Length: 223
Ligand code: G3P
Image (cartoon, rainbow, N blue to C red; front, side, top):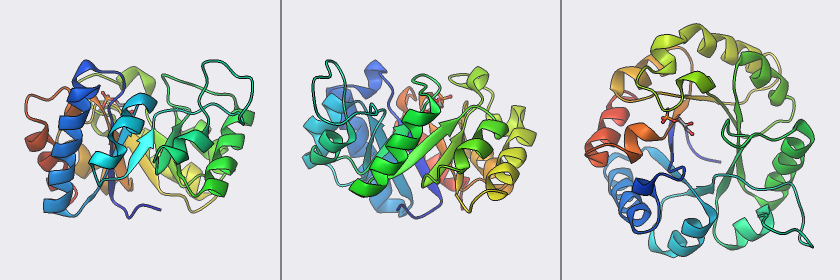
C-alpha cells in the first residue's frame, strides 16, 4: 500500500510519455520523489513497464489489465504477467478503458492475491460508492468531461469530490483520489481540502513544458 497523499501520473499513450520519453519522464519523477519524499507513482503501458522496470525505483502501475488467467487469449494482458514484469499496482476501469463490474471485481481480488495495489476509477460519486463494495486499495473519481481539459475537477465540480468521499466512506474506509484537468498547486490544495487523499493526473505533467517544475508545483499544493 502506498503512503498518502499520493500523486499518480498516468502516461496514457501520449508520445511524450512513451518509449524513450517514458524513460526520461520516469527519471524526472524519480528525482522529484527523492527530493520531496511524496508518493509518486507512474502508470505505464505494459511494454514500457516491462522495459523500464529495472531502470527506476519509483512504484509503477499498469494502466489496464484484462480479467483473465493464462490461456488462449490473444491480445490480452493479465495481472500475473504484469506482476512478473515488475508492476506494483494496477489502474482498473479508467474512463478510457472501462470494464464491467464482474471484471472489476475479478481484478481487485486478483490484485489482492498477488500483492498489487488496486486503483479503481469511477466517473461519479454514485459509481464510486458502488465500487467501494469491492474494497480496492484506492478509488479514483474523474468526471470524464473534464479529462484532458484545462479546468480541474476541484474548480469545476467540487461537490462531486465531497459527494464521492461521502459515498465511499459510507461503505468502507477507502482513500479517494480525484483527477481530470489537474494542472497546478491550487487544484491539488482544493482537492485535498475537500477530503481527497491524492490526485490522478496525466496531461498536466506528461504534456508540460517542464514536467519537473509541474510536479513540484503539484506537490507544493499538498504541503
Ligand atoms: O488518468 C488520469 C487522467 O484521466 C486525467 O487526465 O489529462 O485531465 O490530467 P488529465
